[in-house]
Every structure is written in structure tokens, then in C-alpha cells.
Amino acid sequence: MLGLSFTVHPSEVAEDVRPGESAEEHVERLARDKAAHVAALHPSAAVIGGDTVVTLEGDILGKPSGPQDAVAMLTRLAGRTHEVASGLALVMPSGVVRSGVSTTQVTFRLFSEEFARAYVATGEPMDKAGAYGIQGLGAALVTEIHGDYYSVVGLPVPLLVKLFEACGLEYTFPS
Image (cartoon, rainbow, N blue to C red):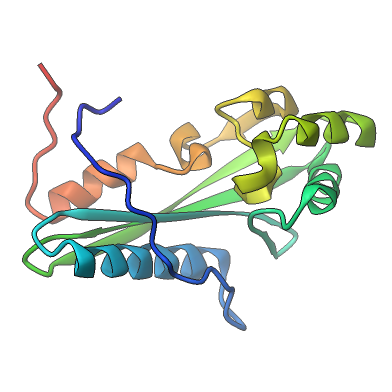
């Protein structure tokens, strides 16, 4: 979408939450750790790392462990507003590292457990924080958002451009 040339290289960083760690601290730490891990494998590349979680009432909801967990997350979120925190980190070949966090409020419509089960049966929510993808079928769960849509998707574009600028890179639109 942004006209950037890239290669996806998943990191092998454990996504465990540390005791006392806020959602924002968690996603920024993981973004930095993931970017550093991949940068060590590709030292001549600029590397972007990211992580996203959903929080509700102070609880961090990552990716569901299975279909039953996904249904439980979705029914807990139904009819309520939650926060999505997305962390990004940029590691430059020079060793410069910049990172940040973007948060967005998302409100779900009220829906039944059967509706949640039907969504989970599509397979879409199984690898997504909070068990939904706003950019796909999960859009049917959402009534409103306050903040950056792309933070909910998992790549906060305004933050990415800000990190580019902080590293001395100027984003230009593709021609």
C-alpha cells in the first residue's frame, strides 16, 4: 500500500507478558526485540518489528490459544469498548533504533455466542490479537473506532512514517 519493497521474516521472540508490564510497554518491548532479532540476521537491512494486543479492563488479550479461547475473547468484547495497542520499532543498518506505540479505541456491537462461534469457524481470528481482524470478516463486529484504523490492523502507518523521519528517512509517495 505504501509502495515499500519488503520481505517478511518472522522473528522467534517469545510473546510472554512480563509481570507489571503495561500493554504499551509490552508491545513496544516486543517490537524492539523482534526487530533486533531479525536485524541480527540481516545486518544490511532496515528492519521493522511490530506487535499488537487488545486490552479490556486492564487485561491483555493476545492471540487466542484455540477456538474456545477465541470465542471466550469475542464474547467478552461483545457490546463493549476495548483498546488496541500496536508497537513498532525500526532498526537501521547503522544500529539506530527508534520505536513507539499507537493506541486506538474500538467498540464492538453486541452479538451472541453463536455469532462468535460462526466467526471463529472461519479461521480468521486464530492468529490475531483479541481474536478478530478488523480488515476482514471481523469488520462485522465493530460499530466504531477512535484513533488510527491501521493500528488496529497491526501496522500504524502514521507511527511508521514518524519512525522513518526519526531515523533520517523521508517517506515519499510512489510514482
